[in-house]
Image (tube, rainbow, N blue to C red; front, top):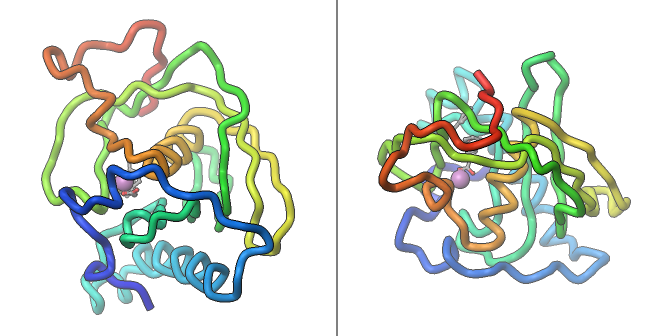
Length: 183
Ligand code: K2U
Ligand code: NI
């Protein structure tokens, strides 16, 4: 099982590289890695397992965070209406997005960042993504608000972008123009 020792931290080159597309169909090894990434997130949200294995809770994970520069992400979370999003995705791509932005009023964190970086992270309020799922099927997801933010955080990792790259360095808590606050 994956644990925190498998997650690379700031300064590791894979966090700043542009990850490579996965040739389809994915290999058995790639599918196992993606399944392991999803299991890590589930384990990190199980109080007993997270405590026993000292896992930080996570709602998303990208392969570059494991030092693997491939376009693979996993997400496992409920949105504020209680809808579950639990996916292992290959080659996710944002195919359209809103002009309107959104940001988490709590700011963002990252499993690869062992420090608090304060400030609002402006992202698109609504996105449509296309990807290939763990079963090898093409998938299209229309996402908004918190779900859109989580997926953008993970897809950023595939392009070497960290959440704090989006924070206004001079006025980190300035309300991003035309943006909706997600509590
Ligand atoms: O990519 C990662 O490092 C996982 C992040 C994803 C994330 C952070 C902030 C906003 C959206 C996505 C971790 O999940 S950070 C820890 C966390 C745990 C529960 C809820 C929010 C953030
Ligand atoms: Ni992150």
